[in-house]
Image 1 (tube, one colour):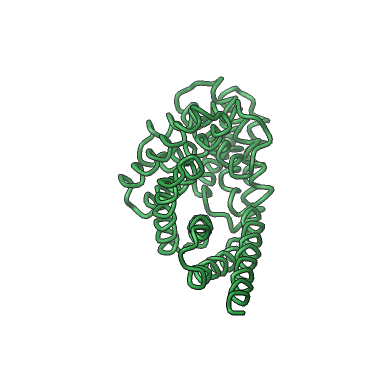
Image 2 (cartoon, rainbow, N blue to C red):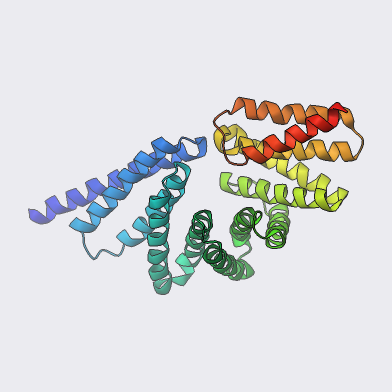
Length: 303
């Protein structure tokens, strides 16, 4: 009797984990982070309860690692960096244990967790440690991609993340990583997942910025085209998360038009960039740079 009741209780909490996890995953692409945070926290609480009533079950470890990884991502978006760092650190520790037992299954998941922790560590002020974590993640993905081409998009996503974080502190590292990511994304098979579209757009955006500064018109044209196309998808899906980046891509397109003497096209792209920001007043990532680009363009085009 006790065994049956215990199995029922385990099944109940497993269903609870799955229900809250599915709800969180559905809310994340729409940028509804606070609601996703509630469901993610409840999913985690249910996993911890499973560990209490079913101790020693190895199936609980990968579930917990995955939920901690999601919690780190969501917590960052709602501004709870303490929880984000703690969850990401615990996720890496769990994936390290799992990868030692089953490297084929968990090696790339460990790399993804290391990349996430590297980003959060850099955002929190420890760039040296963050760069080391991102480098380890990229190397793991590179090794996996050498034997499995389907893993290339994972490598490209981590490289794009590395480029975005490094842009403000180490331009050479950022541009090198962005170019490698961009070349991979241009040859991988479509369709891309939402996270890959955003990474593709971010890599293209960084290459476009560097190419504009370096006067490489052909590279600018191709990179801006990719950035606008990929970041538009993100903006349509979750405006507050992506408006700043999408507006930047349109402003860079306007700068390219200016360099080519296409003033009317430049004015249109500048107006489109400003309109994107107006449509998402709550957007924060990338917004300040977009506003600065737009202001400079308006001043230049007014002459």
